[in-house]
Length: 330
Image 1: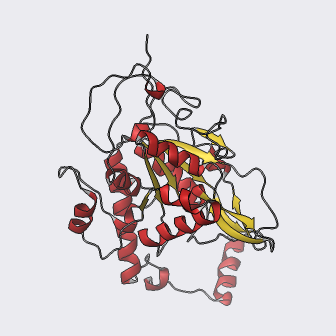
Image 2 (image 1 turned 30 degrees about the vertical axis):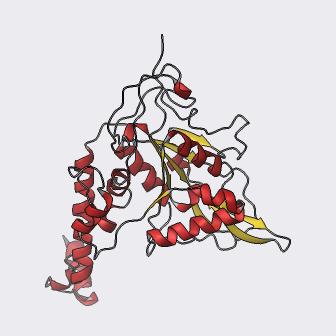
């Protein structure tokens, strides 16, 4: 009997930290942002089998051009020029607030006009799954037929091109960047964005793998700070992708993160932090309302009602002493 093995239809590097790391390069010991070991091999595997590879960035002020340039710069420091030219990935950032929904849909929807995008700009960032889901809907893949891994026993039935299924999507997440000398977050608006990304990935119905930093380098100006609460939300915790040698057995490969694979047996469903099933549209709508209300309050300068408008009689010390004296007499 042939057991169907579903290779990932998409892998997502959620946050620059999950794909790149600071490493010392050159004789002077300067630190540079480079690709994590094993990322190149993993992307090449995706190119061979048609799996989509996405790099998502929610950093304020980031756009797809800047993220692409950052990726190319990290590739040049990690690889030779030939290998860099062969790499290709999909770069996604939340659209700017002044972008219209029509232009965004026209840009993303190349094959199916029925695809709907949330298109919530910054209101769709994690822990809302809207940004992650819109990113997956912006790419298309050629689904593989039924059969085993590596094409064994695979049928020839061809399914039309479509978006990657969230149940066959694996999201990689790493901890926040912090400075070693001041313990402050680097290039972020708040601490522990990694937990929000884990929650968004679970709510979208994806598998989540956390990259743990077991050996921080104190000589580097920036390191990864792990979040143990975020680890508990993930399906697996690893310390690296392995290396870029395709001939060796690796910790992470497309076969290893298949369904079933080395880390799980069955496809996931959208779930909350405690494992309860959730309705994705309701989660997205909840965060949209909450964030729009926060924007309205911040723009109008509204605040909660204070006690300044309540007329209260202030009792002096002498009056308080007289009241206490009357109580003693009783």
